[in-house]
Length: 104
Image (cartoon, rainbow, N blue to C red):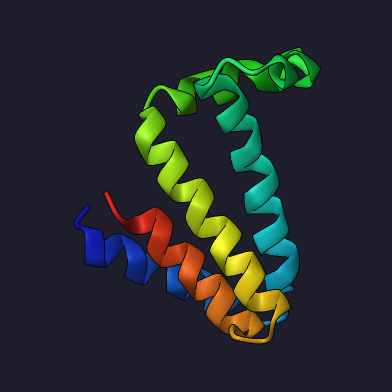
């Protein structure tokens, strides 16, 4: 699936659920990505991840280098800060993370 087609599919899926709480989705993405970070960097916090989820995160973490993980984490922080300082609307916040995760 091409990059633009994948992004387009993500937008269509979101459009189907117009009542989505963009801030909630953003916070869930940040939370889930934090668990992937713990595994990528071998942090002690990974021991707090429930065993039934840890295997899934380990598999996902294999596709992230430490550099890419740092880059994404930095971007998520920037988006959060911009949202909290009213530089991003909830719609823009969600669009930003879709674009971030659709990049290869």
